[in-house]
Length: 353
Image (tube, rainbow, N blue to C red; front, side):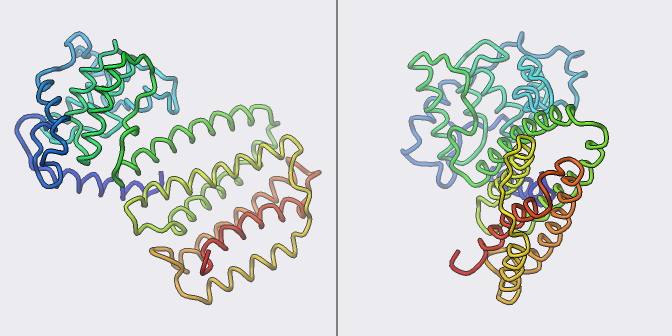
């Protein structure tokens, strides 16, 4: 996750915290009657939360003191979903209790993929603990968020209970309506995709000789620099879904890179060789952008210039690596392929596009 993306998420979470008055006991949707959350529209879900107010997880599901000490700094999201490590739902449950206890006394305890919210998911799916949709609903009542999300999530869980649902794919993201939650869920999806890509890349690198692996290191560095430069400078951050858009851009460029590697490995690269012509077209599009005004929202010519310079270093790193790893492809074919991709990026900011 890039620095600006992380800062945006933290800012939005802080805004959520400040918007909710502090109360001595745990926050509960049944008690929330501020602004848009009041009125008859949400009466049904609030009645459910009132009925389940005192329902709590069994003590036997909590970590003992020794286990809690060993879980300091744990990440329930990674443990539950297997992000960057082997999935361990039981340990994720113990970790989530630790996270929740660390946040006790605050109206919003933990992230949507940690603490109380993670326990909601665990008990809903019956993965890491015995399924208990009433308990999952009670926990949902204590996960603060946008009013529409609160209402939808409580009703959703109760509907699953009424039809004796036995699935395992309930998620916090099923019922989101706000820009903040959209960003959080995009970041979650991005983390999972990133871990999967890393696993595939690791398997691929294991098949390469040492010389190819060494040659790949500077390419991966320049790829990461370009992805960060584009994500930070070529995404309009003026809307409430700005975090989601940043994650989408990051994932799209990383997927593009992974696809190129896969095609090169399988001798399936495009055969066009108009590198010089493509380069001229790209330079013309770039000059047109630099000669006009700032494209849109927070995207400015200065930022596009920063990303373009990072892309040029990325392109050159690709050509150097391919000369070692895929000498039969040739600079003209690979250069044409890379340049056409960049042309599409730049054209998206032209007027009317």
